[in-house]
Image 1 (cartoon, rainbow, N blue to C red):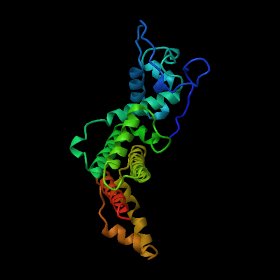
Image 2 (image 1 turned 90 degrees about the vertical axis):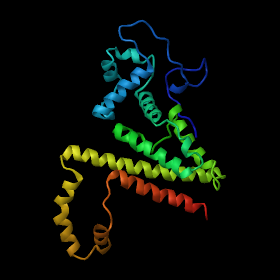
Image 3 (image 1 turned 135 degrees about the vertical axis):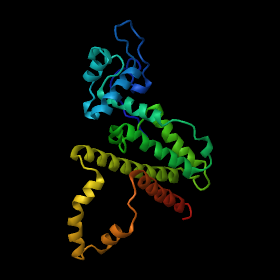
Length: 251
């Protein structure tokens, strides 16, 4: 996994620029509003929680901290670095003991998946950062390490290629599921209409389509399948994915 290089500091004359994770925080200086990367990130997260990721800028973060924007550049070089730090802070919220689940790879992956969902429900903007390039901060890497280690220590997962494919499959499901849930939550806020209200609105239209006989399987799905809330839907889908990973061990 190649690390992405960014501007903002160097390791010496002629050396490559270092990532924000490798740069020490500058020493604190006496000022009316003392700063640190932790305070900067906390302020940025609060802005994103309130108004979305698009509301975050170095200028707005500086204003929230009662500091000049140029002071922030002592701690980070770009907005991209700030977003990376914000994502890592959310991964830090997912840390916590899993000792009781050690030796049960399914239970560990299920617990980690639910921690991602819980984090996204607290910070909807975090869903936008999932599924792209890997997060290389220490907390993000710690999350990935726990997923990989849970599988690699289990019988049948000696091949690291199999481990990676399994982790990627679970992550792909989690990303898709939480993004769908966030999209629905945002739709409710924009339209003022809950999913149940929307279903009642479209029910006459769907009834007319069913009457055409063109969608017999869909009609059976509507009649015979359980309509679960998001939490139970998430867990049920996760079970299907984990069952698939387990089944792959027998092939």
